[in-house]
Image 1: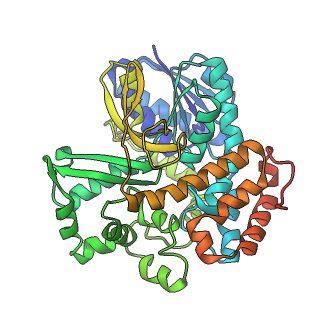
Image 2: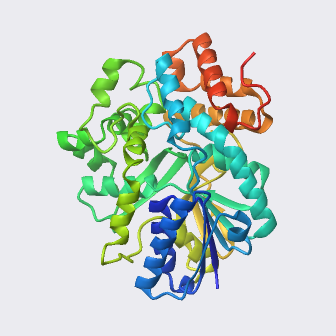
Image 3: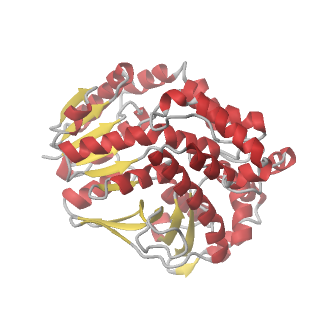
Length: 443
């Protein structure tokens, strides 16, 4: 009888989807689902949602609903984390302060000044979670969905090397399905090798029925509708020859090509050119708009007469099933330490590569060298992440400043003194969430 602990269970969409997927496996239909969140309102809603799923599936499942992390984790076989340390009224400054200095950000949850400060607020909490896992369920498989993925996983994996930790992102399989659709291929006939770092990974090989599909993708981009669907990513592909995994909006933040001038933003990141083309503060605006409607949205779902129990495409349930379910091996792209996996990225940095899950645990695939043009881009991001994590673990604000100074977008827009002033303002704004620092300025 397996036990699954959801830390940050109030993330309604993730928790509902992941529980549905887990319970779709016969090995887990008599399991315990422990839902833990500090927000009692959200915890109540998600508990009702899981009760609805259990009832619809007629599963023999025990549900624990708690604000106590120990109660959720004790004896767990699988742990999932979807926390957010600070509401929108906290992290909105990650977007707004850089904008004051001229750095225009679309999402800001991965890297750059916004992603780094989200990491600084979240790393201490994640390390506390790992301490509890080490104490109450040391053999559990811990899967993280919280961003910034690479920096959080790097911090946890470096401080708790004996725990089985990986981070998951759905952009890899999501983009692969998008590309398959562009060339009129059935996704089940697509194979690929994808590697890099989270939100900046590339399909080093993309095949349809064994044949290289990149020429067909290039041909598909001649269609203005397809080109305009992902302008930033399509331009990156035409430059770099390999397709990136994350949305155009995200990718517009990770380099110096698309957001350093208003005319470039207007040209490449205009509204109406895809799901997330790169408009300023896209996700911030989504969250602010949702603050007054999320309860109604959940109530509407709870009142729907039918409950969809069909398994989705998130990796987590398949991974758990491979390790402590029926033992069916499962290959996925996961975030793991670079222990000789990618030769031209920093060793021990967090990389995103193919990983095999089995009853033996995780076995990551050695990639070798990334193509030079990919390595030039990704190595810079990885080094910035390394400095930011070092700054958090050591409580050194200078490392944070240096990490932000080398961010490609920031350095394309600002001079050194401007970057220093921006970093100091962000440190002071976040001081209540940064217990690892004793000073909140840069000398």
